[in-house]
Length: 208
Length: 136
Image (tube, rainbow over the protein chains, first blue to last red):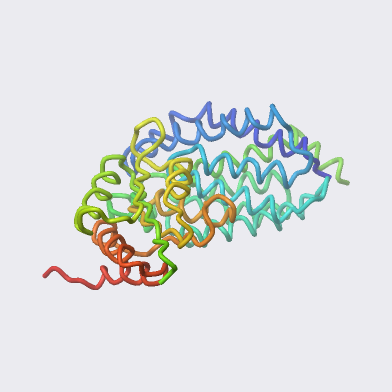
C-alpha cells in the first residue's frame, strides 16, 4: 500500500528531476513555445518541496491537493493551473484514506487527467501533456514501470504531431518535428512516481 | 439592478502594462468619475510576462463590492489560472465569473454596463456580445 510518505517521495523525486531537466524542458519549449517551461516548473516544484518539508500532510490525498494548490499559485505559466489541477483532482479523488493501492491511485489519476482535459480542452493527439498522461494512467493499472514506459513513449510520440493547443498551435505545420515540452515534463512526473516506488518497485512488492 | 452595488471588474493579462492600460481605457470610456471598481492583474509577481494567481486573487478581492465580480482574461495561462482558481471554490469572491469575451472590447463593454448598475449576468452578456461586432 502507498502512504503519505510515498506521495511526498513522489513529489520530491519529481522536484529533483525537474531541477535536473529544467534546461532541457526550456530548450524544448524554445522552438514552439515561449521558452519558460523548465524555469516555470522548477519554481513550482521548489515551492512544493519546501512546503512538504515544512508541514508534511498526513494523507496521500492531502499531499497531492497541497502540491496542486502550490503549483497553481507559483508557476506563472499555463503549466501551473494544468499540473495544479491534475494533482489537486487526483488528490481529491483519493479522499481521506491514509493508505491507497496502486490500482486506487490509477483510478484517481484518471480522474485528474480528465479534469486537465476539461480545463485545457485538449484531446489525445493534440500534442500536449495529455499524450503522455492518458497512456500513463491506463498503464498504471499494470505496474509503475509500465506507466513510466507509457508516459515516455507518449511524450516521444508527440514529435511528429501538429500542435492544436496552446501557443505552439499558432505555428501550425512548423510545430511538427518538435517533442512537446508538456508531454515531456509529464513523463518526468510519471517517472518520479516509478522512482518513488523504489529501484525494484519496493512499494509494489510490499503490496503483494 | 443590485441595490446600488456595482459589479467589479478584473482584467487578467500576461502583461502588467496591457492589463493596466486596458483598465485605464475602459474606465476612461465609461465616463469621468465612474464608480465601477476595475483592477488589473497583469504579468507575474516579479514583473515578468505570465499570470500570477496571487495577483488575480488580490485584484478580485479589491473590486468585490457585493454585486459580483466579472473577470476577463487574455490568453492561455491567464484563462487557465482563473478557471483553476474558480475550481478551488474559496479563492475568489462569491459570485465571481470568468467572462468569455474579447479582452479590450469586452472590458469596455463590461465597465460601461457595470457603471449603469447592471447585475453580473448583464455585465457578462454585454462583454460576450463584443464578440459579435465585426470590423470588416
